[in-house]
Structure formats: C-alpha cells, structure tokens
Length: 360
Ligand SMILES: Cc1cc2nc3c(=O)[nH]c(=O)nc-3n(C[C@H](O)[C@H](O)[C@H](O)COP(=O)(O)OP(=O)(O)OC[C@H]3O[C@@H](n4cnc5c(N)ncnc54)[C@H](O)[C@@H]3O)c2cc1C
Image 1 (cartoon, rainbow, N blue to C red):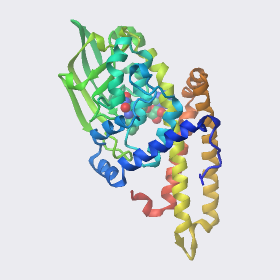
Image 2 (image 1 turned 135 degrees about the vertical axis):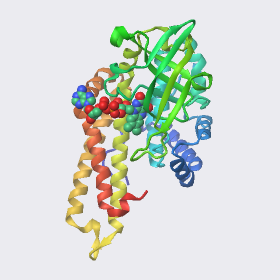
Image 3 (image 1 turned 90 degrees about the vertical axis):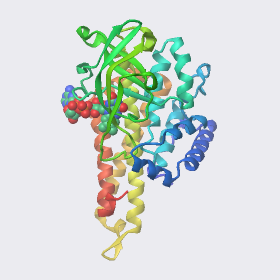
Image 4 (image 1 turned 180 degrees about the vertical axis):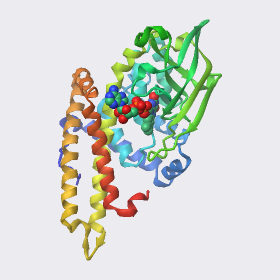
C-alpha cells in the first residue's frame, strides 16, 4: 500500500497510462538491475550504451511528435517515467533532463529544419542532451554569464566556461547559453547547439564531487574558440535565448519539485520499513512515541506537497500552466518548500536509521 493516502489523480488512471507504466517498469527492472546501477555510482556516470537501450525501448523523447520520430505522448508519460526511474533507484540517470528539460527546447523553439535534423537522434539516444547555463560566476543570475558567441563567417565562435553541467561527461548535444551581443543585456543572449563530436576546442573538465547523485556526471565544460554553423542557433534568430529560457525554466522547476516529492515519499517508505524492523531497548523503533510523532509530521508535510504538486501537474495538462508555474517559480517559498521538505525527509531517514543511514 502506498505510504501516502493521496489517491492517484484521475488524469493518471487511463488504461494506456497503466500499460505504459507496466512496460517501463519491466524495462528498467530488467535493464538496470542493482549491480549495474552500483557500477554507475562507482564510475560516477551512467554507461553511454544505456541511453541507446532506453531509446530503443521507446522511453526517450516520449513527447516528441510522431512527425519527428517520437511517439507523440504527453506529460503524463513523463511522470510515469520519473516515478519508475526513482523507484528503481536510478537517480543518477538524467532521463528527466533529456526528456523534459532539453528536448522541448528543440520541439518548441527549433526551426522546422532543426527539428527534422535533431529530434530523431534525441528519441533514439544517438544524442544525449545537456544544457549549459551556469558558469563559475553566474548561477541564479543568468544575465551575468560571460560566455560569448561571436559571429564568424557562416557561424559563431563560442568562448567561455560552464560548470555544474549534468550529463557533462557523456552529453554530445549541448544547448549552450551565450551572449551574441553583450551590449544588449538579456536581449543579447542566444541558445546555440554544440554537437561535441564536431566541435574543435570543446573540452570536458572534471566531474564534480557531490553529496548525492553519485552516478550523475555533473561537470565543468570549456569552450575555446568552438565554431558552430549558423544553423545551430536555436530558432535561427539571435537574441531570443533569454525568452526561450524563461518560457522553459518553469517546467524545469516543476520537474525538480516532482522529484522532491517522489524522494520524500521514498524516504518515508524506507524509514517506516526500517523502524518497523529495528529493535532498541526491547521494542521496535516504531513503538517509541517520538518516532510516531516525527513520522506523522513528515507524512503530513509529504501529503500536502503531493496534493499541491498534483494540482500543478493538472494545470500543465489542461494548458493553464504558464502563468501559474511562472508565478510559482518566482516565489522563493516554492523553492524552499521542495528543498526544505526533501531535505527534512532525507534527514529523517538518516536520523531514524542511525549510523546505518550513512550507508548506501
Ligand atoms: C546537481 C546539480 C546539477 C546541476 N545541473 C545543471 C545543468 O545541467 N545545467 C546548468 O546550467 N546548471 C546546472 N546546475 C547549476 C544550478 O542551476 C545552479 O546551482 C543554480 O542556478 C544556482 O546557482 P549557484 O549555485 O551559482 O548559486 P547562486 O546563484 O550563487 O546562489 C547562492 C545563494 O544565493 C541565493 N540567491 C541567489 N539569488 C538570490 C536573490 N535574488 N535573492 C535572495 N537570494 C538569492 C540562492 O538561493 C543561494 O542560496 C546544477 C546544480 C547542481 C547542484
């Protein structure tokens, strides 16, 4: 029985969603057994071949329209995948980044030619995505980026460095945020696609150590005079990058919040299972009143967060998401909500498990 008493929303109860969930569960259980996943954690990155396998099974670019080689599914299918991937402990496999964050930039802002050129490769896993916004001196304040893309012949020459880039070691399709006209502020920002196997001067830096997401290759990237053809300017119009980012970042924030709620639920499940089995001072940890208080508090917070996130998702599905999510995204309390709750639940899981909680 699920640990939270939140019934699945009506929009997730279609038989075809259930069939999709069953088939995704079978695929990830079969293709990513614990031993393989532990290997990825040790290596600090997911095997490149697993992306191909996932593409061949039909789980990459699931919302890409059929005209561009995708199955033309919708956001509910993405939710199923996020849930299945989390339940299989594949937190380092950045499927959400590829499917929900980066691919939509091409679907929604690419020219017809760009969609035909790139989308089939993103669906098959021939290309693995990353998005390179953050820099050593620019995170939340994206306007402060210093990477430039100067016009040079029939293309652009990119110079700069990026950091914290998910999929940094394996991505070969990178959406780079750069200034094509530094004098124009936010209106001088553009998004350029760098296909790394064709990019001289592109270099991957070190994989960054983190306190979690061991299999995720969050990395530095360097662009030293990297030349890309003008056809790699997303949407074929300079200066549109900031508005393209502002249009798509709310979905990224929603994805982070969905992931946080899934993590809270999993942390609660794991903790309850543990305290029911672990005995101390002659009784189960679960039988101590303090444990029950703490778990009740955590369950209440997780329930509120799940109901809230389901409402956000319903709005994405009925098309009223732009204004709603933009408002949310600009409210610091929403970011705090997902971080605090997720952090609180992780801490609870660690505390309840004592020193054993520090072990994977
Ligand atoms: C695991 C991981 C994966 C990532 N993947 C990617 C990726 O794929 N691509 C990418 O481009 N980036 C990625 N990032 C970077 C991420 O987007 C940045 O960390 C984020 O934008 C914040 O930037 P920063 O770390 O430089 O913090 P800063 O922007 O320096 O913020 C520092 C602190 O100041 C606070 N702060 C900032 N602005 C304000 C304000 N206006 N008012 C009040 N407080 C403020 C912040 O909340 C924070 O607490 C990743 C980061 C991590 C940890």
